[in-house]
Length: 208
Image (tube, rainbow, N blue to C red; front, side, top):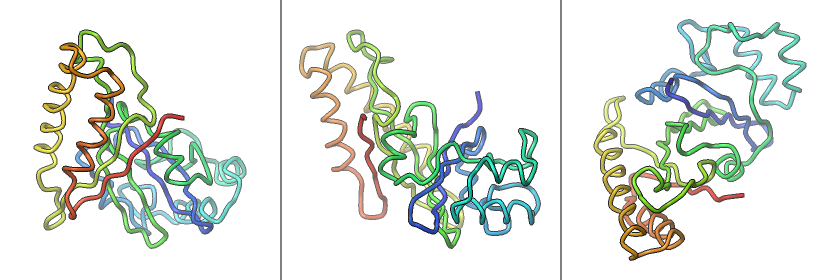
């Protein structure tokens, strides 16, 4: 199934290009693999990758870049060099492009190649609840940074496990008539705001 993620690269105008990676969400590994020498990650530095990144973040048309550099599906990079979307704000990316269920990670890469890795949180209850029906996945949740120490994430697995456990508990509330689905969703937003400490950042999506 892969470890899907989206990577948002900051453009010269302050907006972002969104690129897809099928395995980049695994162990948050792109946090250190996306660099100025390897902008789309990969085993070795690449001049063409640097040129493609520069062209795309300065506003060149993706189709023209693809044709000029003969980019196809066999590129030896972890991140697809050609973006899925261009010139979007982070708010638009979180609300209209990020799939909080299927994307494990959301990376933001600024112009200086400082990479921020966010874990995605889906507020859906349908898989643990007996009464909640199908819920949206795009824009329905939040992203949250993780702690790092000596180049490694700290407590990432525990935090994800705690979120899953709370999700199961919240799923019982509509079943028991305590909350309706809207109230349960609002509880999730309040829970994330209340439990995210000063060392981490949480950003919320919205349903378009």
